[in-house]
Length: 280
Image 1 (tube, rainbow, N blue to C red):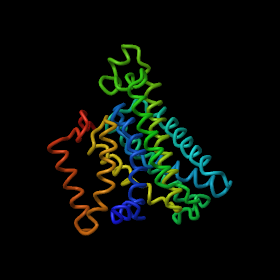
Image 2 (cartoon, rainbow, N blue to C red):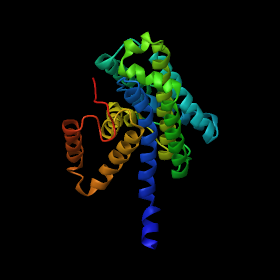
Image 3 (cartoon, helix red, strand yellow):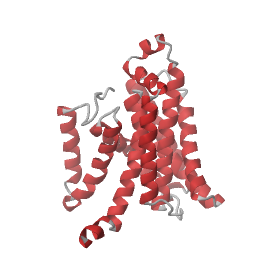
């Protein structure tokens, strides 16, 4: 019994569990944008970086409490999500994916060349306020919020956009409003995840929020199943923990990671829990 308790409260296990929880929060946001609304986004890491940097700056420069930093990170993520959502309203499929990819690169390059944000060296000394209990609280909140949203009248309107945008508009659904709303909420959760991430590691730099981070989050969503809250959670847990489990075979773990994703795309393209195929 003692050995089990020691294993569960091992620092390494707690660190992996906390990072997994942060990934769940961000992938749930991506699921709302891509899985529920049908807008393929390849720039989700950009909103994570906005949340991480804004909360870090407010904590270090202004000495704000942790909760204020989290609110600021979430708010800035939502603000930039809304600002991006408006000009890309008419874009779909691969055009939308390229636009969000471009936004992600713009954010990364701006951070990289801004001395106030630490440039390539990043930001050190962020108060380590995030722990497993706080992360677990926000995971439960995110799941509950997304479940209630999807079951609400607004959630049904958002789903109708994914199924058939023209038919939804003919039925009186305000397409522009709900697309921007989806981007805003999804980006807010990415900003929250970024703020939790920054206050967990105490150090961030632009490399943490590159293109591959967005792809990693998309892979989690695709593996679990797009449009499914259960799938988003399951995919995040699997792809956050499997690379750690395969550390004993570190030379081959990314190969194994890739093989798993290829097999998923071939035999179950809708993901383990999803009903929607990836549509680029």
